[in-house]
Length: 265
Image (cartoon, rainbow, N blue to C red; front, side, top):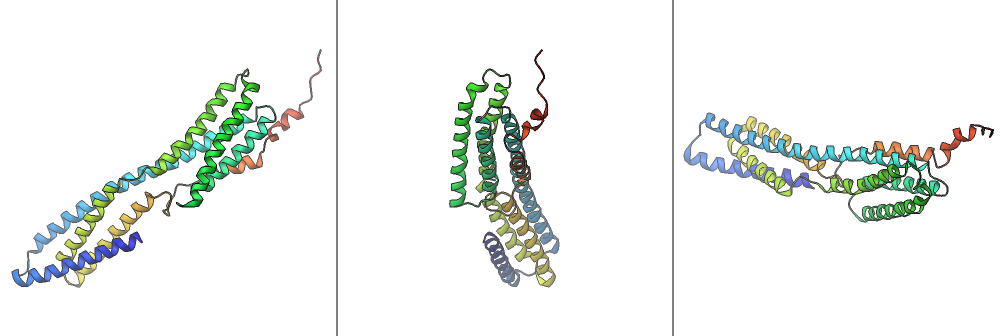
């Protein structure tokens, strides 16, 4: 829909420019080709600058979202491994909560804006509360152990990553930037329709408008993580979820159980 509106607007602007050219050419005669070339170069150069600036803003936010996915996967993975040092039943309880939390996060990243996304967000918040409640319950059994401080640190880091990731998905290129860019693109289309006449000129103008319109649509798509076609990869989270499911709580005790107990002298 956005693409249809943009291209339709540029087409109308180009037709208006073409009509104005016919009107003023009939009354004033042909203008200098050099003058028209300077106008086209200036307008398209500034448009390219605006598109490039907006594209850089969108890519910066995309890179941030991609980096946050990796950071969250590392935080959850570290917490899961350290959870295997806890005593039962806390180890099994927290390990299952971490697995469910990771699965929900992977599904949440694929959800479009709507009721399903809100449901996934509510489930994520509830799982965070349950994780901290389970940690509070397990703390008396580990507070005297050396790794208790580092375990709480990783658990807090994992919980903090939820806010970081949500904020990274809310960070967009300011709407005012897109508004100025769209308005300028319509003006540029009108200038091209006014300046470039004849079959060759119309072909050149059409090609330029298609290219710049496609570039603008690409920027808008990158800037829409919840509804666009280009979203950050979830591969780190997917690999982590696969590891957690293949190595449930208790599977890390195999080597410890294989070591025979040493006789007490």
